[in-house]
Image (cartoon, rainbow, N blue to C red; front, side, top):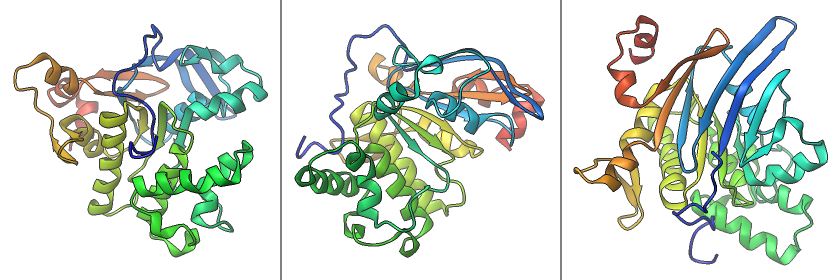
Length: 284
């Protein structure tokens, strides 16, 4: 793994007929009523699906369901071909190693250093002490924060805490990362840094992403740009008339939740050219 970055994933996915994530008629509600009412969708491997919707439509809820943190009242949720909605808690704990979760507020432990926050899952898994520090340094180097190892979260800016959260999500080299409003509350420059990290994970390491946000511009950035590993920078995502380029253009799709269901699902061009008055509100 040394010298290849924090992920072992190659750009070519293993032969597997299953989508990375699949929701089948998922229903879940609380005392105030159902939030999701029979929602179905799929996320293919190496794809980024951007979840959009007004507050309370179930975006974050969908991430928690995919991670097995909540169970649906009805329906099934399959991740990498496994039904997480029927797993035992013990099996879920082991299976979650294949998923990274980036919470909106970072959700770091205030009493732990950055290094200990990132190492937390490795320590829980009983990884040998001599293996932990190199792996922590590797993922912190990926997010350009290796110099913060001994700092506490309170000593970091909001953007830095978000990047530490991404590093922690990557520590087990998961093929899937779930992002909950990863740029919310951040300034434009810091937001671009976060988007660049997400692009790099998708385009260099083949990481699948389910990303909840109210910032449509984040979704457009993911659809319109890609990370060029050779140039080590973000470049405009143009197909130049070739099939490989066209395939890359399809790496990001959008799904809009409304009133408990899927209101829209499709690519950027369909969304931008819509005549639907409700969808147009997201484009303003």
